[in-house]
Image 1 (cartoon, rainbow, N blue to C red):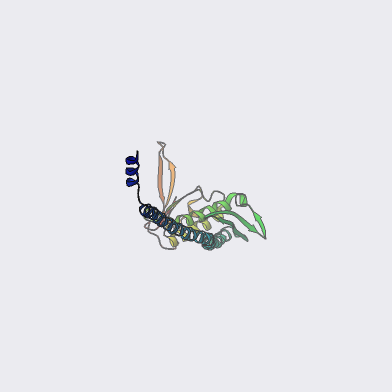
Image 2: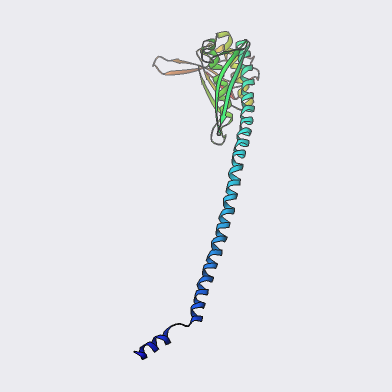
Amino acid sequence: MEAHLSNFEEDRPSDSAVIQGIRRRVDRLIDRRRETERRSKQFRDQLEEVNRVLELSDDVTAALEALNQQLFDKMLGLVQEKLTIALQEILDQAVCFRARSDFKRGKASVEFYIEREGNEESIMNGQGGSVANILSVGLRMFAMMTLDQKEHRRFLVLDEQDCWLRPDLVPRLVKMVYEAGRALGFQVLMISHHDPQSFEQYADKVYRLSLNQHGAIQADEVALSPSHPDGATGEGDQDEL
């Protein structure tokens, strides 16, 4: 029994070895604590940076929306000005084209109307539909200006846009289309049931469509008046039927 106890005492670690082991464990724990504190500080710094960005994001978003609103309002102002001139010149009335816009979260909405002596009128009911037809031409031209010319040809087809106009007002619409088309580089094809004489002053070519004896559509070119403003030879930018 005494021999066994003696061997046990010989195998037991010395106090100094135990202390050194504890110190090594404590050192490792201290290192882990320092690393944890370092990473925690890094995360806190990142979080503060994110919070600063988030605080700025609202201001940046508001600034971008304000800039977009300014640019949108500028373009809308130009549209109102030009289409007001078109309405007044064609209808010979003191009406103004107006647009009420709203711009939120990068999206714009617009409500169109006309104003006569300070009173609002619906563009769908004005002048029996002639107002809507005139504005439709102008708005489509403005829309086409925003298209990439590499992918979209500036060719505009107007199908009976003069249907609600009095015959004596049709040449005014044709003049507007002609001048706008030339200025913007559009090729325009107009289709109408009105007298070809309403078009010949500004058209490069005029065709009368009819059904022949076999029921097929036949296109007969109408001779142009020598009063055409450009002395057209049929090689210009606009064709009108």
